[in-house]
Length: 105
Image (cartoon, rainbow, N blue to C red; front, top):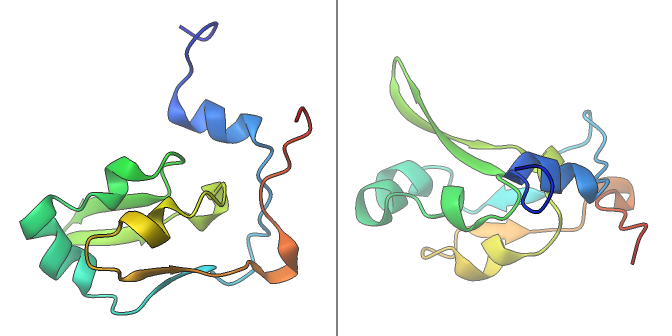
């Protein structure tokens, strides 16, 4: 309703997350084939649901599904590093120390 509850991307905006668009992705996949080849058929790729910031998406395309990482939204909770069933996602420190800036804490 925008007063008591907010959508996911509004909550990410409240974190004042700042990642430079030109910096490399700080969320590394040990094997880039695992999200689609393993996690999607076995678990319906849970990263797209457990990430509180909506960083991970499975997009349907002409060549089939593809895994996309929107690292600019990352709030550095490290849920992906812990909950990924294949332990394929490795959270690393972003270049330049960018990330959330929680001004009201």
